[in-house]
Figure 1 (cartoon, rainbow, N blue to C red):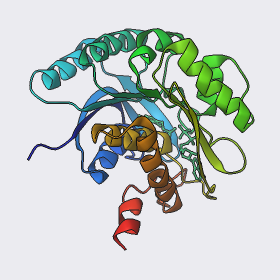
Figure 2 (figure 1 turned 90 degrees about the vertical axis):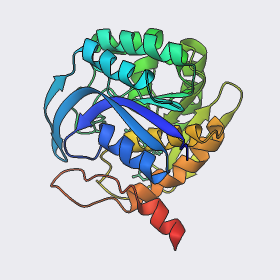
Figure 3 (figure 1 turned 135 degrees about the horizontal axis):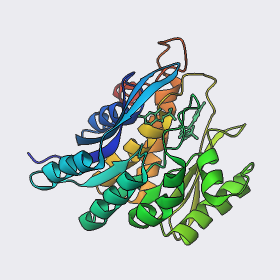
Length: 266
Ligand SMILES: Nc1ncnc2c1ncn2[C@@H]1O[C@H](COP(=O)(O)OP(=O)(O)O)[C@@H](O)[C@H]1O
Ligand SMILES: Cc1ncc(COP(=O)(O)O)c(N)n1
């Protein structure tokens, strides 16, 4: 049997809620075979990030080559990419692959710790976005990328369109978890604007939501769904993962990757 496969290129979260750990757990839930290339190690738990150790660019490349020489990859997802050198090298590698690519432009952890160097932010549009099927910024990330304020759904719509038109990404999904009211995300796929709307769940346990959501979209692209079809599948997945999130640790607890499957099995 040959499974669908997904490769995440991201940082490790020792606490298991975000980063590579969230990505692999999510791929598993969608029955997509997961592979991982580590960009940085973080010493992290639900209260915050205690330290970061970057993997040297040459060794990230060694990991990518190991995969490229042996294993089939149906989709790529990137998360934490801290340094300019790494962003450039990864972008060059992704450009050669010619497969669907989900770029989550992780800048700052939910606890406020910077996960990307300042100079890397400005380079994302040059080195990574042009190869992305979709980029998935949250509101503060979209505001930084576009230097605009986003406070309404209309602003999100404008931001999604600008991200595609100005940065050359195939699509942009602006995530509205940071706005008051419902949990609304806006997708522009280069042709149409679509809204994905769910109730906002009252919880502090949202550690790793962005990583989990982007990985669920990637898994569905691996299964050959369209971009809008993939987001349609991933949105209820992330909502249930937040609804049944784990109340562990004394900070922001992690999302529950198996909640959506359990719900469907009933
Ligand atoms: N409390 C919540 N209840 C329901 N959905 C949420 C909640 N917080 C975030 N989401 C959803 O989770 C996903 C991740 O969103 P967001 O929090 O904006 O990104 P990030 O985790 O990257 O900061 C989006 O689909 C968003 O709408
Ligand atoms: C290694 C790593 N990658 C990504 C995130 C972002 O996740 P969150 O926004 O939930 O803090 C994180 N905290 N750590």
